[in-house]
Length: 147
Image (cartoon, rainbow, N blue to C red; front, side):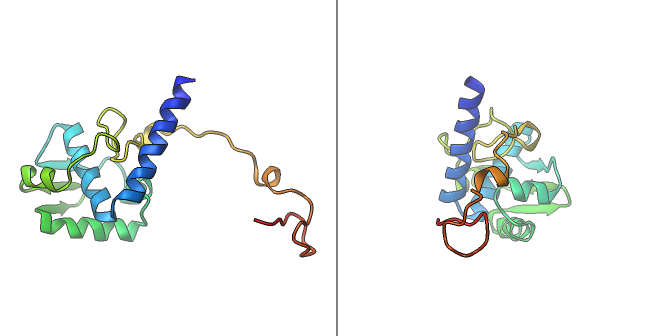
């Protein structure tokens, strides 16, 4: 049961991260969290492909790249899979981590979500189990319902 509670806490933190921060803020907090976990305040090495990180942060790959580019005005230089932070103190002040959203103990990503390798998939009902076989909208198509 405690595993389920921890998973719920991570989900709540991720929703807060998605709703309360812009794309650039999410990426900035992710980079800051990553650099701290790696023990290198002046740089962060991306642990996964950019499209996986973008997905973890609730972004399209292109939006993730634009957010990384926007971080340049905060003193960040992207060199392939390494992100160099020219002024770590300024960067940390600009992308201050929130203990209610971010946690260094719970995986890599900002937003409290576990790192990609730690995600646990919870089985859900299949699509056919979620949609009734009756036609409650009168469309003539089975499996449609009012919503």
